[in-house]
Image (cartoon, rainbow, N blue to C red; front, side, top):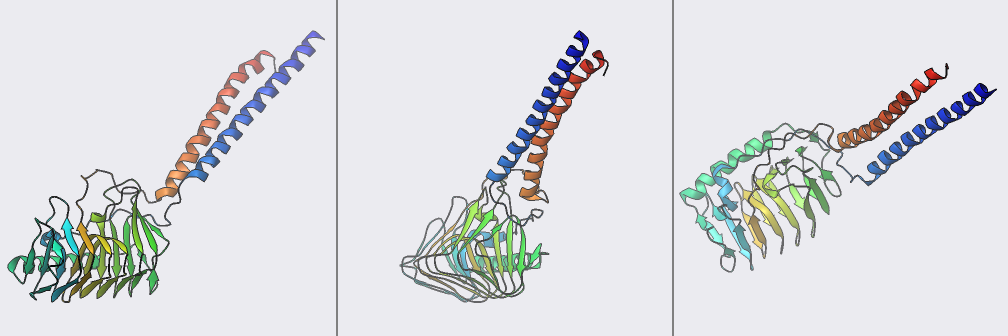
Length: 312
């Protein structure tokens, strides 16, 4: 009778231990679910990080045109320390509206000189490189980027790209993340639209290869280097962190702020994983649930010897 009572008690103890182990697993799973809920929204895109576009001598220019640069109002052309910040035109030589526009030293104006000519040659090579990259995504014509989040990669529209509101470029913690957008014909942004950089993305690593002309809306905030084969028009009171480089045509400015930023030091962060943020979520869940399974195994290992002792 005493043995029966002992065995019944042990069964209850073991059952209670198993129940506690199951509750631990449930808590781990709930913790993993809560972790996934608070993860920030990730881009639907995740590709290997492309190489940056080599700008060569054109990288010393913040504004470069083929035929003429025209300005209305108090436009400021500038660059971070160590970046040229020049304004130039070649093969044309007409620069109007400076002053009242200002090119901040050490940047200077190069109108139809050898420096501007060399920069134009380099800009042409940079466009050829950028436009010739194999795209990771090809959009249907005409694609509006508004409301979307993009990670590093090459994005192409064989016709035109538009930005009618805000678009986000997510560096995913990698300051070397490169974003390349290819527009077969035109690039157009609406008034007050924004290109937002998050999680380490840098304007120096954003490139827009435009087959003909780029037009930025008034009061818009733009990021990246525009490589337009023909011309570029920047709307009134727009701001650009990057460059406006046009091939054969004009660059038109109006009360704008165009600044070329320096890149932060190379981070050494490797190519982004193919699954991007999804991989992070899956890995995190696996770690948390795995920890719960370890707890269960340890509880079982702790319970098993007692089972042997009671001859079960």
